[in-house]
Image (cartoon, rainbow, N blue to C red; front, side, top):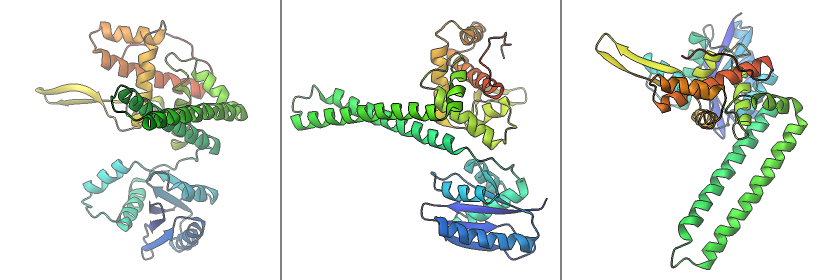
Length: 336
């Protein structure tokens, strides 16, 4: 099937779209980032698709602070193929090809050429309820961080000899308001899960995994759903580990150059931190995760390395539970 690859560089107010053409002249357009711009973009791209004799349109986009959400939703509704690529990976690919220019149009052209030459697989759309849950969790995390910051300020200033009462009262009011907001968000998330029972069932299954608790289960659930959409349901546990940047990277050259392995850290930083904290709590109990962790430590592995391996083990277990839709069952695991 012949595909017309279209690169899009998007910003808050506008976006540039470039199609990688062979038969006709390269098309460059500038659009407003709203419904009217999406429609103009679609009309011109569909016309170009017919001129090129292509059967499908494949949109190549970099994730940009959520500005791409509206356009991607529009593209999915029209039946276009969509891939959100890793910006660092595409930039390194462009540098390897000797491309140095950096403008909005050049970025869109680079994405279109990357799509045509590398042909990345299209990604499924993440369900609307998963996107909503993700936004709820992100807002909850934002409020938690704000609340902790205000509590720290209050603690650091409470013994200051010249602290005005107005400042103390302001801090107390802000802390109380943030606590109320956090409680409301927790209720909203509970209500949301009751309205989407399949998500509630899935998070209960994930809670059967050692180390997965109340703080980590829902972000982990969103992560698993997003990975399944990106891989169109064909992803493996090994790919998931690499997707999150927990894959080991050996460093060796000849006989004389050999350094300790480290993880790639090419995925979601917050996701890695979440799993690390889950592993830190999980290895303190009496469960298969602690057995795995202690076996590594007894073999001479540093505790931090063993914790990272335990975080990776939680992720692999979570993917197995998520795919099989069955609770975690402890089975003998080889130590790797």
